[in-house]
Length: 535
Image (cartoon, rainbow, N blue to C red; front, side, top):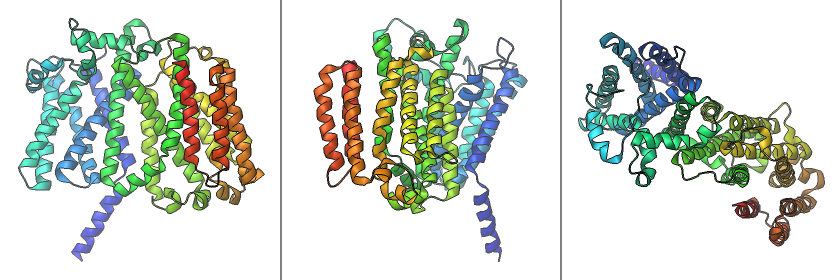
């Protein structure tokens, strides 16, 4: 009887765990830390810290560090991820110690997040010097108290779970390495540029990279604020990428079956499709304004952030679409997670919530124009997929929305790198070319869903005109689009290539065994060739 009660209590504890509540709790603790920092390290202006610092940079910093601790503890103890997350949530309370301790002990004022910039030859000395609570500008006694308390608590927890001495010792060493790596993030950014600028100090080189980056060029701020904002945005990019990667790792360790189901549902050819459309915008900007300075490490990180953000947006859009298409997928795509009932509704909702939070933070670190067009693209896709409108039900509305989404993604790519953030900087002619061409080719995705769409009375081209005739119609639309684009852009040397692609499209659409991936490959080849002609 006692065992039964104990098991019931354990089951209740597992049910109480909520990933959504963990995220909200972490964010709440970081905001309290920000409040305390207002008194221990106030902004010189007397106002609150900047919006990007308060709501994005500082939360992402703590999120990333404590996700690293979560992974470390899991690898050392092999405890359930849910238990480890509950523990690290309590561990996060130690972040409230530094501002309180510093005010009580020394009254010192240090930055809310301290970073150290050094060259590789200084790393070893810095690694040991940061251990000392004395003579470390920017790293206060309060920070050391919190850091050592966290490391000690990790070692105690690890020992309780493993009953061995080595894992706790490894926990302390690895935990300190994690803190050191985060404290020196800017140092790794300058490494590729060190040999070219031997006489410049590490901090000066970092400032130059920020000044020459797209972040600074596309940020609206006065000169005194611009570098601070650029620094917050750039570091937020790195931290955001780390958060995304670590959440994916935690998902993999926590539930490999769920991870595989979600990964397999993320259709790589569609991601590459939207990547190429975003690249169209970037190349268009290059053709107007010249170089886009891809050699700058800051720009590379910013570009990586942008493409990961697009991937997460696609992932969320696919999940929303799959919810609406369960009855269709049961017939046309029975391998989809919801159609197979692989993923419970609660887990599906939790994954969507996590994606939404990640997309929110990722969008917030883009410049305003890029963020606007990314949100607009997600909005258009929602109207396309979801009830009550679910405009994908008719091929005319479906085509228009996909054409519009292509325009929005291309414009997001354009304004990511553009020194001119005026909306009219994006050529009107390019808007029409992108919108019309991608609207025309968008209907090929409906061929594989023919049976399910017909059962749901969806008015797609295959359902309206029949499968055999629709393949000819869609192949004709492909051919028209393939030839229209080089003609509109005066790329007459590509006409013959486009004609060849058009004939090959007819072959792929009408052959006995239709395979969508070959249509994607042909489309990628055509887009890639057009892009190469502009570089």
